[in-house]
Image (cartoon, rainbow over the protein chains, first blue to last red):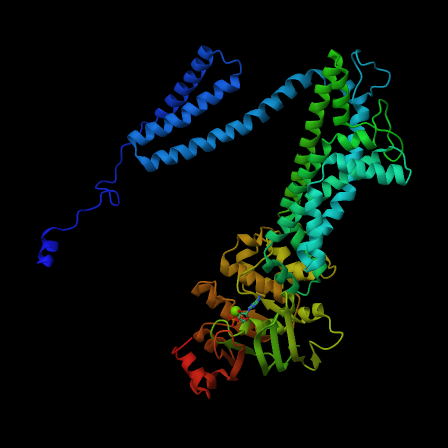
Length: 360
Length: 258
Ligand SMILES: Nc1ncnc2c1ncn2[C@@H]1O[C@H](COP(=O)(O)OP(=O)(O)O)[C@@H](O)[C@H]1O
Ligand SMILES: [Mg+2]
């Protein structure tokens, strides 16, 4: 009896699993643009009506309307899966915008306000004898200080960091390696002012050296090293073991294998890590105030006497609060950004030029 | 001159795990010896003990003797780097150096070990690429990266790289397992030519390949998963394939297990 029922009444097909047609209703192509315009309009209107001061709030309302409206519209016309897809996509895009807008606005602001102040004179003269309310003066002394301090810090931190990373990945195992990893992690979290205080107490107070660019570079290298170690370590771990074995099997000693095969393979990523570290220390102010002190005159010797640096210069000029000082602060900030940018591009160029063939 | 290998009582460990147990055999100079056996029976491990690559693996440890002519590879004062220059190796997956051009890949072993004049290197690179039957395919693009070649070409490039340092023994760990039949044939031909210069040991999962290229064949097996691998028998390839003395060898060759 039950058997006949089954054959006579076949189980109902489940429509959600296999659709009857491959076509699906779709929103027209212009709908997205229309939605964008519409939500922008709603954002503006709400802002005007409610009397919201900040354009950021208008933008956030528009973004919210765009995300929610897109979801509702798609789910009404195209179905649930497409709606979720649309929701995720618009969330990603909105987050991207929210992240990039401040950056773009920061760059724009710095360029717009900084460009008028940047000139050959500005780059080649110091602040010697220029009073805070006077126009003129320049950042040569600060630029020189930044270049020297960053260079010295790199000379200390990059070799140490690279060697530490090579040890951890290629040689280290067991307790020593674990301890080093732990201390590198701790170092990553050291606030710059603490690094500055540490060098202040060690180098200046206990060992009795005076203020100098080098003292600042010591603190900067403390900040730089863990970043170099960490990023290099990750890059070295990405180098396939097969390459190391291929080299060892040719009878190449381990150290040459590391130098000629492992490091060149990872050089691109290592460079990026070093550049990030450089960018970080080039903008440090706290240890510079403590250890380099600041100076309006040109001091070309980083090992003796107070120097200046770009971030410190920006800070000082801002603190003066006069019109001319503000202009100088913006111009110096622009130069600082350009400096980091140029370093970055140069390093990338070197890495690209080195990486593909590396004949010797 | 190619050398003879004499192994006595060789046992290899990964940490505390014994991977192969008490293996003794000899390998004739200027001949091809094939290792066959089911996966995990320690063929690669044994092969890697023959040029001291086993100890590169963390925890890798070896007991026993490997005589190359009459020098013990594991004797006191032996430098593993010199061992590896004498006993070269080709791996299962082609692994050209990605940062180097085709030319630099072949020259790598020499360059990384000393200084050579440009003209000298040119000659060596050409000779070894010809030796690997690759010269005609790459002579117009020696400065292009080696990773741009096909899998079979890459493997022949790796063979040229290994032969360029003029080893006496060449170890090959399943060199054709990632290749198509045509490239496999090219490499088998190459092995036939190379044995006039080198002592060759090749691991393969392909019975026909073992039968085609080798003079002697060694069969490895393990009693059970987790047990160390052992050498079951070794002999002339013709004899092993037509008239094995051990039942397990016959079963394996005829495809009844493994
Ligand atoms: N790197 C390693 N670490 C630990 N054990 C390993 C490692 N490589 C191989 N083994 C073990 O050693 C045994 C032999 O492996 P292998 O020599 O690769 O066998 P085959 O090449 O014959 O397939 C296996 O039991 C395997 O699990
Ligand atoms: Mg294997």
